[in-house]
Structures are given as structure tokens and as C-alpha cells.
Image (cartoon, rainbow over all chains, first blue to last red; front, top):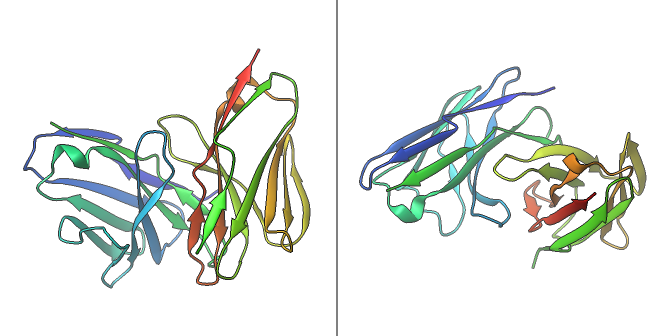
Length: 116
Length: 109
């Protein structure tokens, strides 16, 4: 089945630094990838839709200057959390669809970010 | 507005059967997904329904009634490893996923 690889699995960084999270589709081309954020005991919150070769579409309330998304190729999207604050600590998950728009999303394993 | 409702938490016994319900209200509809998520992990795909009826996959089955805006996930022969959150998500007319808050399923021996 479709595989999505996300790296790193967990990261601890200091306030004010930036962190980059990578999301790769290993066995299919993903023209669109999605970035989610999940707080403990809550559901997924869509942050942005990442389109290959174009600017990401951000959901309302998500700061695009803080959460930089780049989708440079059909198999790689990156999320950079800039000038991280403790409130950015969360579980970040990427996903991609392997086929048509109603194909199931396949998720990366997620990245647990802790900002100290 | 768009909304997904599912119970917050359910408890069942190992070996038994449990049904997790989900009702949805969306702008258009292009199908409904069920995902399983273990604590601290990303969701994994379980099922997709777009036509009315029951789809069976081993111990898991998913049902959809489009006229009622209703779906359920049925888990049979429950195992301890089935303890997880189960997320219902509907695809709207723009193919955007609307997520439910998830149902935490607790399996007791």
C-alpha cells in the first residue's frame, strides 16, 4: 500500500529556533499533501494544503509566515516552524493521497515537537 | 455549517462486538472515511464508503446511509489491541475532509 514517510519522529528545540519537518511519499507521486496539527486528546486540525509547484493554501487562523510549507517535488513537502514558541509544541502529521480526490489519505507517522 | 458527531468514548469487552456511530452534515458529500489512531501515533486508514450499505473487511465493517447522514463502524471479536481512537471523516463537495473529534474505544479483559 501507499507509504508516507515523515521525519523526524520527534524533536526538541529551544524557543526562537526553527524546525523543519519532511514528508515524503515513497511509492507514489503526491501532487497534494496535507499538514495537520493535533493537540492531546483532540482531533486533527488541518493547517494547510500543500500543492506541488505552487504556494500552499492555509486554513483560517494558521500563520503562513510562521508555518512555512514548501512542496518542491511530487514526493516531498516540508513544513518549517519558524521562531518556535512553547505553544507550538504539538503533534504534526502530514498526509497524501495516492490517487483520485476520493482516495484515502495515507498518513506519515507524525512528528512530536517540543519547544522549551 | 459542516459538522461530524461521534461519541467521545466507548467501553467494550474483549471478544465482544462494538458499534461506533457517526452522523455528518456537510456541504455536498463524496464519501466517508474511518481511521484508527493509537495514542501517540498517526491515523491509519480503515474504510471508505460512498454508496449506501455495509462494507466488510475482516473483523471490521463500515455502514453508510446517505439519506440519513449516518455511518457506523462495527468491530467484531474485539482484541485488546483495538483500544484506540476511531476517527470519522466526511468528504465534502470540494473534496475537503471534515473530521470528527474521534471516539476513544476502551477494551476491557
